[in-house]
Length: 275
Image 1 (cartoon, rainbow, N blue to C red):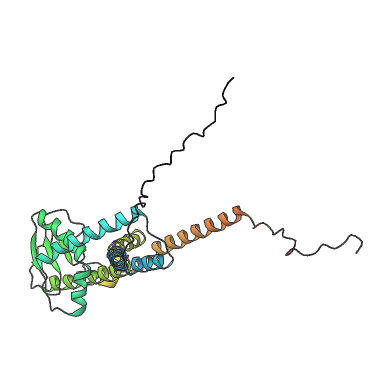
Image 2 (image 1 turned 120 degrees about the vertical axis):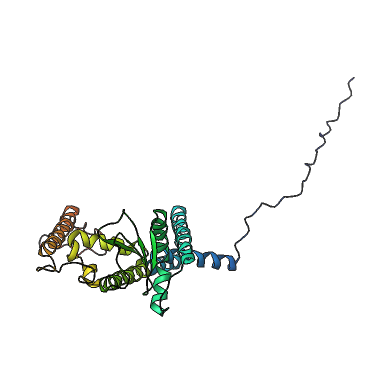
């Protein structure tokens, strides 16, 4: 006779409960830090792109568009280089009557002026301070034409007497170029004026250049041409405009008309055949 065995349930082992570890969260940026970073970003855009760059940065922030990492790096590096170059020019100083516009011009042109001054001093140039807030660096070589204005620094190979009438007129001519540098740098950054000058020079070279005419051809040592402005430059601009217009029209024709809407609710009712 066998004794029936009782089936005992296997003992259940309760799982060991471990204290829940909260997930590590990235600390939220404080509003004050966010405002400071935004202000620094806008300042960098103003330094690199003038008021145009500042407006684009503000519009992007209002639309919720964050700049890419590449754009942040390029703008930040450009602003840092300009601040360093401007600081080097501030060490050299500038003489003048200290008027409001002259002071603004010196500050705005400081990055470009600092780079030009470092170039001139590095080549062993002789630095001369002008009475109108400009600085001249006399070099032996490495100068285009009789000289070129960079910000408020004039690189030249002309050795003239400081008190001569010719030198004074040339200084006034170059001071107007410094005004052009400052005005366009405020509007579109330090690259705006040289880009526009080069574009104008491509169609209206030499004495036909509108920036040179505004600065004064006689004061700059240019001979006023008889057909100023250049007829060839005008024809070139007209031809370029025709080419651009023809290209836009051709692209629009290649795209073709927009497809008609097939929505029944918006399409007109079709008449029956026996209408």
